[in-house]
Image (cartoon, rainbow over all chains, first blue to last red; front, side, top):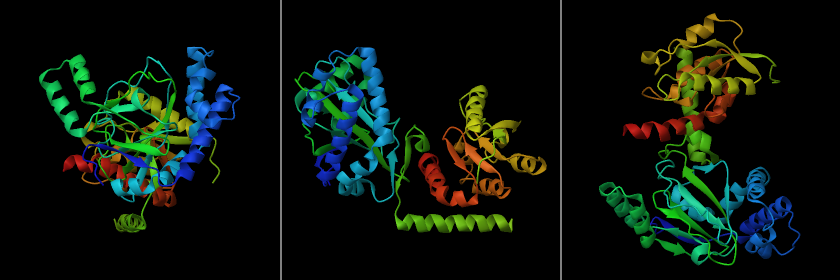
Length: 256
Length: 133
């Protein structure tokens, strides 16, 4: 699996799971924003047209409630894992943690608050993989931009020599690529690469989810592993090791 | 087991942690409340023995009516050469629950430790062990 750029786009292995996720998110959007439209594609892609009367404050409140409902009502961890199981296992192995909460990002056309240039490490572990899952087809400025790993390193080396953030940002964006990702695909990327999004200049809204997986034993980032992640999948091999170790520890305590 | 309404907890802050003790106490108190109780006793803040926390067990053994211990963070079990399972098991054997406020993690008894052992071990491995390489 060629991950030398620090990212790749993978096709979903089980589209049924991803379609269920899309439908469930779409229904919660309908419910939260009172949208009466049966066409899922229209609800998602033309979302901005349904909410253009909603004030910014109300919109933000509803968005926060939507995130809460998605996390409470949708089995997103299983659905995402089942959609990209082989890729996740190939990258991280069979003993996995998953981010406790899923993020949803809504980027409406001309929204002047896109995700600024950043990289997730070292706040997040550089051993985590980020999975960015658009629920609509994303292209040009409707998608994300990403800087490959080699260029990210060079850019940070330059930033150390010349600590001028605006220059760094300009150079980073020059080196970045907008990655087209359709529904049915996901962008996998390392927390070690720079990424962000431009102001969405297309005529459609981008609605996407993002979530992180990590091997249970790999080094953590600055965020507390137990606060941010939960156990998702543990191999029988590790279960046996853990069970034997604990038995030994309890016995040792009895002897002391 | 039905939780009691008024559990009494012993609290242990982390002298190594950058958060001031007042903030640590606030988070510990919130955890105690969540566990249907309040903090009744306070542990030592001795910086020089914080890695092993040797003062806890004797205090728990000689003090009656403590239902559990609330630590500020799981890190307090990770400052030694290995995860301090010995202290954790000793406290659980006294039939007291153990709580970690920052992580929102509770271990009620030895049986529950069986399901959470790996979380603790992996936390130590991922957060502390790798730093020592």
